[in-house]
Length: 249
Image 1 (spheres, rainbow, N blue to C red):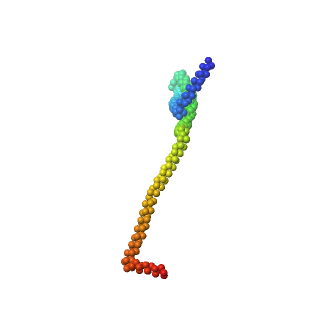
Image 2: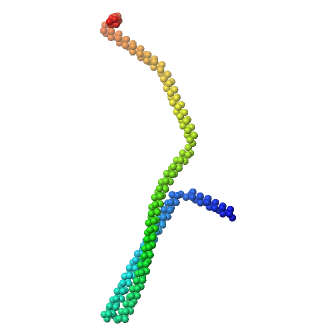
Image 3: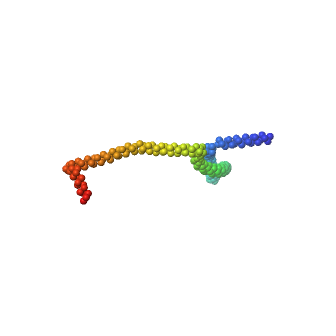
């Protein structure tokens, strides 16, 4: 028998654990707030009804009090008319007694209504306090729900990011970076090699072109000098003698 009890307890605990996992605190809080709002609506309805009863009891008390005063005044008038001889004294006494009985009945009714009014007003005060408390709780829970939703959103985002980070293989990432570095270094070396080859293939041509340009410049300068001497009527021998004299001086 104890084994069955233990098995039942274990099954009950597992069921509660499963239910706890299925429960969403945000949805549960939203449902709780909806329930509180429903309670508030019912409390407001009850408050209105009890207030109506209190108002009705107050009106009944005032009406009964007014009737009691009216019957008392009628009894006085009957006795006054009997004194004046307008009504027989015995008849006046009988009617005045009836009026006073009605007065007492209305006074009792007024007292009962007054007591009911006080009772209903006491219920109104209690309901009003409960309604204020309900409104305060609803406002507080709605503010907490807003904060809870914001926290849930942040925690969900943080959980997803951490989950993604946890799933990243650091060793594979490092190896990929190393392969990338190796490839970049190889490409850089290859680029430098092509640059050197290009430099070697063009250096001889550059030297040839440079020599040709230099010789052409010297030949052109010699031709220009000869043309200038011819224009001035200076022969080659004279030019040489002038140059020797200038040098000796």
